[in-house]
Length: 273
Image (cartoon, rainbow, N blue to C red):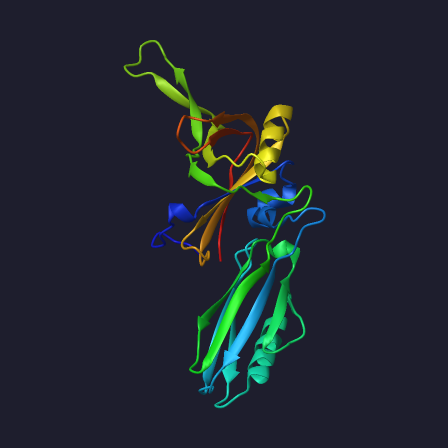
């Protein structure tokens, strides 16, 4: 779990959007909101390739991170001295298949496809430790894409503003008292402003512009990560609506879009794993 000693790098912050409000379950467990794939989502597929010269005995380690929940799984694959390419690739496939999120395809010439569940989102699979004489390469073959009604990662985010809970303060002056009293009123979570590098044909940017035009009730989320792979993360989700989606086309500059997300109700926070 995250604690005060953890550092979160704001350049790794991710901003998400969905054109529907939070469910009761998502408010109580905000991490599940990030995993809503929607109808017709595209699952992520990796190609795992193994090349061998003369294998040195040791342990290969791969790390998988579920982007939706933040769950991390490490796979230790024992490599025998002189092991063949087919054997090592088969052992890697067997290790990955032990995770319910991952289904490995047939091994051909030391390579196989690792298909993830759509609910895992934009997950990562990386080589953490290698052994001599063996090279394992993991490449993204098919990118994840949320389906209709799914939670969407907003691309090309330039800057994300501030979130805060601020209570209304009510004055209660009383005759004869030196100081007037104060009462705490209702909390207001305010609004979140975001600046984007505008991509006019991007489906997420188009969905945001449409939601702002139609006044759609939406939900939004922020994922703060400690590093690029999301080793440790923090989450916040909230209901609201896009009150504006403006496009800035200043001369001799990158086209930008500014969006304002009004918070309707409470902010729901959750820690990572």
